[in-house]
Image 1: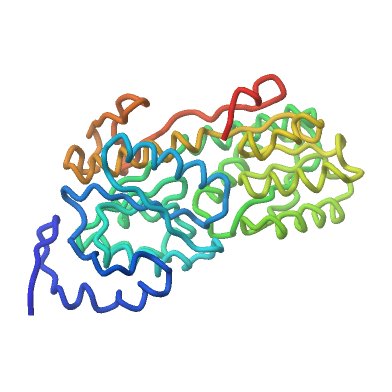
Image 2: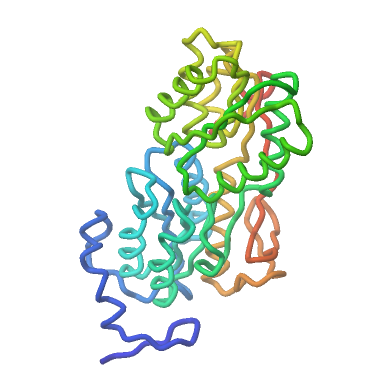
Length: 346
């Protein structure tokens, strides 16, 4: 039995490393040319983005940024992903990428634990794992590229909805899936902020649209029917806020029920201009993808290990430092409204 040393100094049997992977190659439609298995990791400047699901404009933008970065670095960029953002739908893709020996997998996790075993196998095989947008448990990855501080994101969304409803009345949250790490963290912080600083705002329900347009559309209708006194909806997901805006824009609730949350300017432009939505927030997902790719390259090149205090250069974005728990922070979210939305194109 042949043996190979991984970058962590562990010894793993090559036969075992390949054992569970062949089936996954055909399952996810990846590169089946048979040129994989070069060990990934050190010196292999190939980064594959694995978003929560394909066909999501938010992740289309982050992949655009990732591809730009890899072009600058002279490396290889790919994107693969499931059609639906279910907890274990990313596992087969991770297995395939491990077999192909990519240098790094950049994944936005649909579930903090469901993909950990697959990521552990990838790392044991020498592939670096960078999470972005939505983290796994910290022990399952090398670095998490966070779009913004979780508390800052939560505070901004509460601030926007409070301004738009006069700091009183019933609100609901329309989130992504019930297992989404980032949304759940923001919602918990939003609930704390509401309780501490906005006693006249009542959060009546957290609904889940599963990051599916039609489900989010239907959930919006159900919320408005269930709570006739509802004054506002916060949707901390780009799919959810666009679907909710689409429903509100042609309903009797347009201009009467406030909607804010996290969206992309291209998705929300028409709803800002027609008065359905006053303002919403988001970081720049292209910059998030760009930083994620540079972080992945820094790991592959040995510039960083993911330890707190490591520093690296991220092209046009400048210098970054790895913080506690292996987190790299992109920056603060931007608020979009009628005054500035045409300044952005993503």
